Length: 101
Image 1: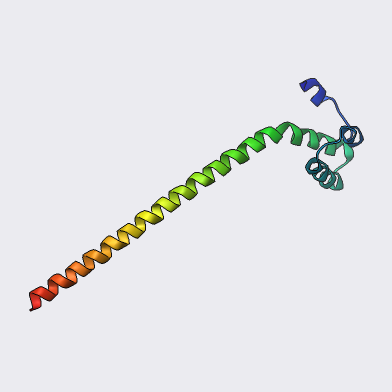
Image 2: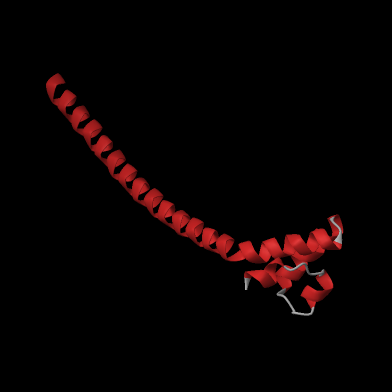
């Protein structure tokens, strides 16, 4: 299978396989900057690295979800701490009011 990937291909040959629209768009962008041979090699790298990149995206999305949950938890803890500080201040106010009477 890897031998097939290592064979040089032109964009015309790759287009015959009807790649996804995402790959076609990426390829058109690459072709606009490079020769067809370079673009074909770049496309092959994109195709080979796609599963790795997709997995990395999933890992990052999971990490982002976990971090959002941690942020929510920390915000809830902060709200509790603010309530405790407010209660302590009120108690101190009441205590000093009793002492001054």
